[in-house]
Amino acid sequence: MENEKYLKDIQDIKQMMSQSSRFISLSGLSGILAGIYSLIGAWLAYKTIYFDTSTMGSYRTLIISYEAVVKLFIIAASVIVLSIVTGLVLSLKKAKKANESLWNPTSKRLLINFLIPLLTGGFFIIFLIEKEILSLVAPLMLIFYGMACLNASKYTLGDVRYLGITLIILGLLSTWFLGYGLLFWALGFGVCHVVYGALMYFKYDRN
Image (cartoon, rainbow, N blue to C red; front, side):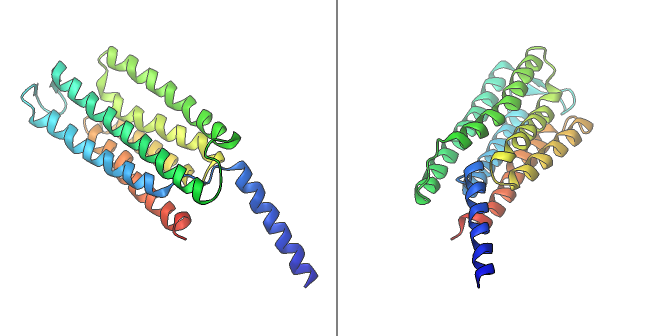
């Protein structure tokens, strides 16, 4: 009986240490919704690119007008804003339910480690767009976002690490199949988010 008590105490201490060093208020449902937003955005982008009168040519020699670029930017910005707002709202709700603070030293470290690769990739992609090297935009978005998830995973749920690895692999594959960037973008940001978000939801959130 005494040994069992010690083991339980050790497990409780281990759990407390894990909770203090990891941001566990990340919501799996926010991942699912972010994936759905991304799939809707990919569908709208597909319609804009291939059925808009302001674009012309095959997928390898596509010419996109300024108006179409603006539409694509609005679509991408809308997906990003909706995903961020949804993630914040659901994570705040989960944190309140667990009587935890959403903004703490662990979440700060998580955000910093997530933003370093993400902002680096974002600036690099902006330079590529300015140089009109558009074929690498989708692959690099997947790669840098995957690196951001991988870099931040040590401060949150371990499943984020595998999401990051999956996105990096998809990004590398996308560089081999240039011209199909939108498809890989939908697979990475859409399908992968839905799948991993569902796994996290059923694993951590259902209680």
